[in-house]
Amino acid sequence: MTSTALLVDDALEPVIHRVSPDMKLSDVLDLMVRNRVGAVPVVGERSEVLGIITSGDLLDQIMRDTPSGDGATPEDRLTARDVMTRTVLCVAEGQPLVEAAHMMVHKRVEQLPVVREGELIGVVTRSKVLRALHLGSVAEPERDTDGGT
Image (cartoon, one colour):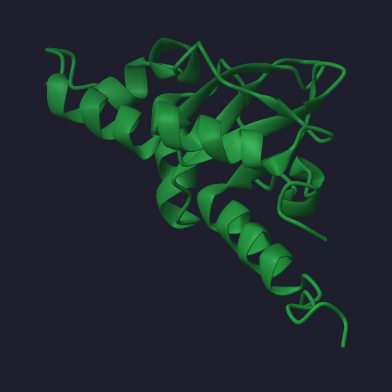
């Protein structure tokens, strides 16, 4: 299989962690830190992607805010909706994998949500894309370079 024949589905990972838009930011932070997750999709009631929260988004929010006078930290006052990136690039499982790889490189994203009919079904990460592209190219049959003799 050539790397141009590979599809997003060939590098698809199931979504293990997702959050609702109303989840407290402190709970999102705890989930991401405990599970060593670099990003989580924010999904609606029908599993539609509403946004994404990355470790960079959280760190930016934590560094920007100071505790309020009531003793509550920003992570206690804010929800996922308040911090999530709302413009999220998504791909479809039948899309060429090289196209997804180009999107990741040019938009500088580590992972892309994969949707089917508007519903989140998984993610592709840079490492899985790289692995699939490499193994796909390694698995190609050797070409006959001497004209078949």
